[in-house]
Image (cartoon, rainbow, N blue to C red; front, side, top):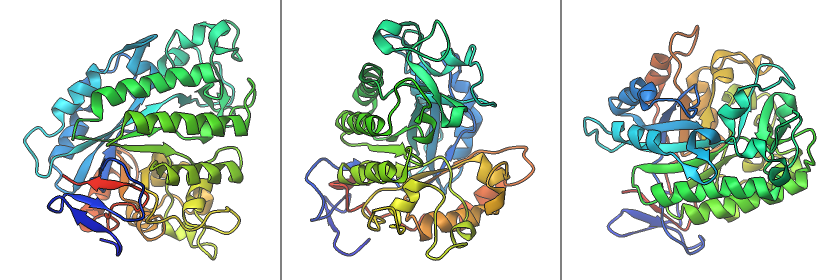
Length: 382
C-alpha cells in the first residue's frame, strides 16, 4: 500500500486524507478476461458460458468484462432488459471460487464497421435502440435518410450515437441510471465502462469537440451518481485533440472516474522515445508526457485498461512492433500506467497470443499496483 494511505474498518476499507469525502468504491484489482464479441438484443447468456467457466476455474483471473451494445439493454424507450447480465452474473462464481469473481459491464453507444462510411444496414439496430434512430424531431438528423440520432465517427469507421446532442445524451444517461439502480449495490459488479472516445468523434451532424467534452462530463457526473460505490471508467483514448482529451482525463481524476482505453501496446513501443510515450492522448496525459498539459497522475487516477486483438494479433500497430507479447503489454500497463485492472481479450484458435499464452503470463505476473487510488474517497476491498 502506498505511503499516505490509511486503513479503516478492520482492513477492508482504504481511504486517504487527500481524497474527497464520499462513499467507498468497490476495488478488486487484478487481471480480467473480456470477450472479443459484443452482446446484441438476441445474444443468449449461454454465449459467454465457456468464458465464464475459464474465469471461474482460473485462480489468478479476478473477473470478467462483458461487452453490451446499447440496443442490447434498452429494447424500447425506457424499456430495459438486463436479463442477460443477470444470467451471466448467475453463471459467474459457479463452483464458489475464492475469492469471488467480479463483473465489469461495458456499454457501447458506437460500433465499428469494416469500411469507412459504410451503410450500416441492420447493424444500426444492433448497436442503437430503434426509437433513437427513427425520431428525427427529437434526436436530430443522421447521414442515412430515414434515420436519426447518430453519425459516422472514428474517421468514418464507426456509427455512433450523437451524444453531443443533449436529447440523445439524456437517453444514455437514463440507461446508466437504470443500470446503477440494479447493480450498484451488487458486490460482484466491479465496474461500468463506457465506450472509447475516438469512436464518438464524428465528421458531421453538428459535432463539436468542445460540445462533446461538455456532454461527456455531464454523462460521467450522472454515471458516478448512479454508481456511487462502483468503478466508472471511460475509454478516453482520443477526444478530437490533445487539449480536450487531457481536459477529460483531468475531469476524471477530479471526479473519481477511471481512465481506460481499448488498446495497450507493449512497453517496448513506449520506450522508442525518451521519455516513454504511450499510444493514446489519454494515456500520455496519465503519465504526464510533455505537451499534454498534465502532471503525472499515476497513483491518483484509477486505470482500468483493456487489451485488444490488434496489439495481441498484430492486425494493427505493426510499425510500433505488434504483435506484442503479453508480458511486454503487462510491463507497460504496470511500469508506466500503474493499472489496477488489465482486461485481456479472450482469444482462441488464433495464430498468436492465444488464451493459454496469456494465462501463463497472468499466472506468473500478478497486478502490482493494487492500492486504492488517491483520487478515490475510499476503497471497499471486501
